[in-house]
Every structure is written in structure tokens, then in C-alpha cells.
Length: 90
Image (cartoon, rainbow, N blue to C red; front, side, top):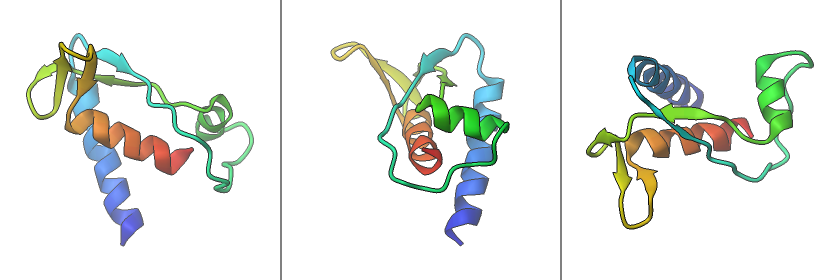
């Protein structure tokens, strides 16, 4: 059930990010947790070897992606989902 929810969330996030125009890069880097690595030569393996996933997030939509002027970081649902996906992949 967790895999299905994560897969659906991944497709939703990818759809939102693909529709973004003028997106700002968000690169959440999380520590590796000893999860199994993907097959050699796949895009997922390249991401795992690099140690981070690069995600674009629109930063002018409150609650989804908004630039916090006090911290100068993008915050919101899209960023949180990207961190969760990175946590799962890495």
C-alpha cells in the first residue's frame, strides 16, 4: 500500500513539476540509508550514485511552493514531496 501511495504521489509531483513555468531548482540531499541500489546503467542508479535528486519547483504559489524571504529558501508541498521522494530513492 505504501508503494502505491508513493507511486501515485510521484506521478502527481512529476505532473505538477512538468507543468511549471520558470521553475526554481530544489536539490534536497539526504543521507543514504543502506537501501538496495538500482540496476547498473539506469537513470535511478545515476541519481543514487550522485547522491541527490534535482527537482524544479515553482516558487510563487502559496502552500505548494513559495520563496520564504527570511530564509531565502523555497518551502511548501512540492518541496516536501521532493524531499520524501529523495528520501525513498536515496
